[in-house]
Image (tube, rainbow over the protein chains, first blue to last red):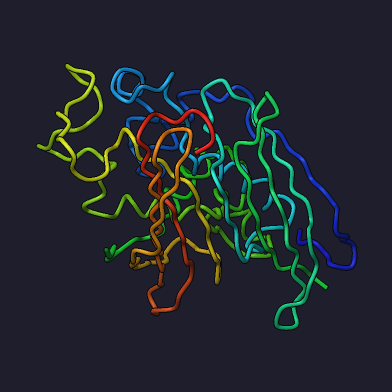
Length: 140
Length: 164
């Protein structure tokens, strides 16, 4: 179901838990699906002994993908015009991520209503791990 | 850099949706997807990231007969060259942005062309940070632009566990 511009206001928000206790297995699943086999994400020995990290950590793109679900669940399938993210902080196995999306603007582009949206994803400590923006096509 | 042929496949879309934990049937259930506004299975918004699977030279995938930096008998299979190019231990993804022209569907066959963009440096808590931008255009079988991706990678001097 697509969103109707007439029923939306700047400041409207959605929130969702994206993952509870992120597993190393899900990170491995993402490596396989995306083709990004960087051992930093799946190889604890390499990540700790060679690269000097406390453990493996998630692909930024896994967090962006999970956060995208909040957007598409809200604006509808195939409605995104743009989606961008900055990876602010690493996401580690065991993390629980919660994302919020907020309408920052409603406008018309080429005669079609468009919502501008801000997203933020936080870990269980309340630290921001991802910030992003998106635009989506609405129904009138 | 060009990926000559990136076929968008139904099974790959399902596996990608599973990996990002998105149970939306529009990514996996032909019957339910048919009844949605988009009228069939589409790919999730970040799916083009998996075009790496079709890049023959993608450096983050082990290749037959070549040393791999991950662990096996030893913590790494690659002896670090002094100096040299980007290292797997210090490369991170800093930003990603997609502009969508239409949803991707199974059966699409895309071609991806990547050009280097801006490059900049700054001092961070992990020493010198070098940022490099890459712009990738994905075109479909008709030559139409379907997705534009802007990616920013960062090389760090030391491990980063705080803000990059």
